[in-house]
Image (cartoon, rainbow, N blue to C red; front, side, top):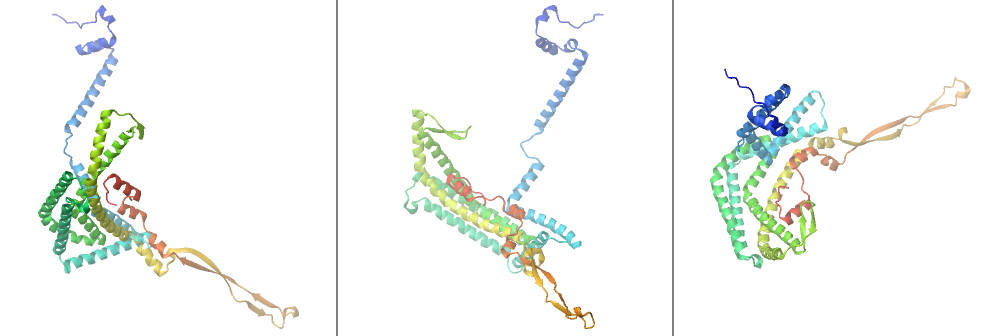
Length: 435
């Protein structure tokens, strides 16, 4: 029988580099004959592991879809709810209930601290006020009445904004604006107002069901009712926020363009890597195009600035109303009612400092008996006592009111915005978020 012997490398192949020989042998399947047994086994195991990792990676990419899975959808919904004032207040209410449960355990052992007492008192007063408000809305009023009143005021607000846009499309305060741009912006915003009116007509039945359901949120506390009012105010003024966002973006782009072209006139350029302004030589064509662009943006700026200022004022008024409601929630949730009651009762738990008062008692004089030694007959014994009276001084009432929990304030109010950042955002056309 014919037997096939494996091919061995010829004598002429010694001049071929070892890398090319290995590649040729691996492609022909003769790599095992050229390498030792241990090295061959290690190489095969390495190839197997690499192929397995490659398959795992391909499987992961194959199973990856653009549509989010259930965990991502749930996480997104939770994050969206927590962005609202009602969701934030409900989260804080759950934390308060946990503190109350810990406080009840402390009461069983006859130990209660001032912080626990403040939490219990604030929760109790908040729930009592919420229940009273809910009973008033259910027994002596109708949720549909308040809904109709809110929708009426919303329609009147939309009509006022529409009349304001019609005024801006003319010559407001005698200002001569760019007619084509003014007409285009006015028609753009009026179209969105028509969309908003249609949206309100479609969603009105859903609002009725939602309001009737949310009325009973007062059982969770009066602060929950205020939170619902804040969110409803946000929904009712969402068109103002959209108008402000459009105008702010357009104004911001114009300001950035003017600032960049102004650097072009001065022969400067912004260095993105070093975050500074460096000198740069521009060509004639660049200077010509820059001059035309700067002139166009400069003459279109008053028209855009007029719309931006009007919607900026409306946005600031809306944020001021929401800020007042959030401030009420913050003060009601962090008010130290238990500490105030202790201060009124004169408890020693809220003492500021302790002082000692020195009191000297009257002298006691005793006379010796007559039958004693003659030297002691006229002697008198004088006894005096010294007493220290402990007095406690009350904490000033202003200090009691300012003793609010900083964690509660930070969890409810969120990050604070400084006035410098606010003014900087207004000047450069950046969107102002809730304060």
